[in-house]
Amino acid sequence: MCGIMGYVGKEEAWPIVVGGLRRLEYRGYDSAGVVTVSRKRLRLARSVGHLRALEDSHPEGLPGTVGIGHTRWATHGGVTQANCHPHLDSAQRIAIVHNGIIDNVEALRKELVAQGVEFRSETDTEVLAELIGREVAAGRGLRDAVLRALRRIEGTAGIVAVDRNDPERLVAARIGSPVVIGLGDGACWVASDALALRPYTDRMVVLEDSEIAEISPDGVRTVDLDERDRDKRVEKILHRPEEAEKGDYEHFMLKEIWEQPLALDRSMRGRLDAGMGSSRLGGLETHEQRLFDIRRVVFCACGTSLYSAQVGAYLMNRYARMPATAEDAAELAVQNPIVDRHTLYVAISQSGETADTLGALREIRLRGGLVAGITNVVGSSLARETDFGTYVHAGPEISVCSTKAFTAQVLATELLSLRFARMRDLGANEGRAWVAALEKLPAQTQGMLEQWQLCKQMAERFQAAPYTMFIGRGINVPVASEGALKLKEIAYVSAEGLSGGGMKHGPLALIEPGLPVWALVPPDETRERMLGNLRELEARGAYIIAVAAADDTEVAELVDTVVPLPPHHPTVSPMLTVVPLQLYAYYVALAKGYDIDKPRNLAKSVTVM
Ligand code: AGP
Image 1 (cartoon, protein in one colour):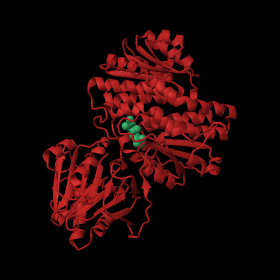
Image 2 (image 1 turned 30 degrees about the vertical axis):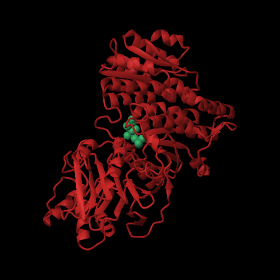
Image 3 (image 1 turned 90 degrees about the vertical axis):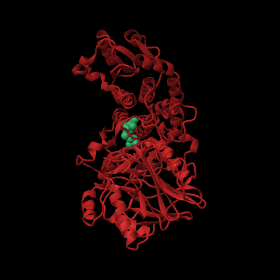
Image 4 (image 1 turned 60 degrees about the vertical axis):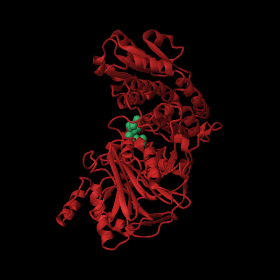
C-alpha cells in the first residue's frame, strides 16, 4: 500500500526520492511528501493527490543530500495535507515516514496530549514522531531514540527517520512492515520495496522483523531491538530495471498479460524432470522426507492468489489423490485453525506481503504446522517466514490487477501437485504426459494471446453491459471467478464466476436476452455437463462466448462466439482459459477510459488486515 523511499549520499536527494516514490506508485496512494535536510533545517513538501501535484508545488525541489519520502494510503485520518507523511516531532527536529498501523496509538496520544503536545494531524505516525523526538531531545542518538520509541508501540511499523542535527544518517526499522536498503559507493537508499532501489544498485540488505539499521553514505549497521549486532547478508536484486517499465505498452497490465509465455517459461525452467515424469522444486527437496508423511494439503491465499490456490487444491485432489482445500487466508487466520503434523500448508502470495496471508501462516507456524510458500517477490516476508518455498519468477508485476502472477502461481501448484502425484498414485507415463503438456504451455499461451482482437471486439460490444457472468466446472471454476474478479477490479462491472453445476440452483434466474456469459468448455470430463449449461443459456437468449476446443462443433453450434483452445492436457487448461478473460477485462476497462493499472479504491499489496 504505502511506499517509502530514502536516500543519503552526495547527490541531491529530491529527484532520487521522488523517482523512487514514482516506482512505488503502483502500490496505490492518495497523497505524497518528502523531507530533506539542508543547513540543519528540515525542508518539508507534502501534497494530496498524485506525485505530479507534489512536484508542481515544488518545481525546484528541495535542497539537501539526505531525504526521505512517502506515498500514503489513508488509514488513520482522512486524505489531507496535514495527514501526509513525513511527520515531524513538535520540536521540528526529527522527521519520519511510516508504513503500518500503531494499535495502541490512542493511549499514547492521550499521554502526550496530557503533557502538553498539540498534534497537527490525526495520524498514528505523528505520535511515533513525537515519541522519537522526545528521546532525541533527552540527549539520545537517533537510533537509540527510535529503538526506545518502538518498544512503546504495539502494531506494525516500517519506518525511516532523520534528525536535522545529524543529517549524515538515516535510521530505518522494521516491525512487521518491509524495509530494504540498497548499497552503493558513497551512497545508500532505503525503500519499502526493492523495485525502487533497482535503478541505483543491485545490492541490498533486507531488514528482518525487529531490526533497526543506521544508514550512512558508507554503509549500514544493523541491530535488533535488544541492541545486539546483526550480521546481514548482502542480497542481489534479481530483476532488470527495464522489467519494471512499461516499454511500448500503453499499460502495465497489457504488458504483463503478454509476458505470460516468457514468465511461464522462466518459471518452469530447470524444474521439469522429463525422464522421471516429475518436477523438481528446490525448496521442496530439502524437506523431502517429511513430505512422505503428508496426508493433507491446505493452500491459503487471498484474491487472485486464492483462485490459483483453488486450482492447486483441485490438482492435488484429482491427480495426486491428496486431500486438499484452498482457504481464504483472511478467514483462516482468525478461525482458530486445527493444525496437524501431517498437513502441508501452502501460502501463496504474489507480493509476499499480504497481511492476511502472513497472518494465516504465522498462526499456523505458531501451532507447529509446516508451511511452504509460493511467491513472486524475492526476499518478501512470505519468503522469509515459511519453512521452505518456491519463487514463481514471473518478474515484477506492477499493475494492481494481477495477471502473469496468476498463471505463474498456477504453474507452481502444478509442479507441486505433479511431485506429490508421482510420490503417490500417478504412473511414470502419466507423469511424462503431464510434463510434456507443461513444456508446450508457453507456446500455447502465446497462441491464446494472438486472439486479442476477438477479445477486444467482445469487450467493445459489451462494454456497457451492467453485469457479466463467467461459468466453468472442475478445474475451471476458479478461472471463472478470476475472470469475474478482473472485470470487477478494473472495469467496475458487476460480475460473478460460477460453477456450471450451481446455475440451476439460483443464478439462472439472472439470465435474460443479450446478457454476456463467458463459458469455459475445454474438452475434458466437464464438457458434457457444460453442454447442458450452454443449452440452458441458449434457451434463455444469453450471448455466450465460449472458450472451447477449436474443433468442437457441438459447442460452436450452441454459442455465439468461440475463442478457440489448442489441444492440451486437462491439467494445464486454467493457464490457457484465463488469457481471453484477462484480455476481455482489459479491453472493457480501456473502452470505458478507466485508470487500468491503478483501479479505484485498490492497492497492489494489501499490507493491513
Ligand atoms: C488481483 O488482481 C488483486 N489485485 C488481488 O486480489 C490480489 O491478488 C490479492 O490482494 C492478493 O495479493 P497477493 O497475491 O500479493 O497476496
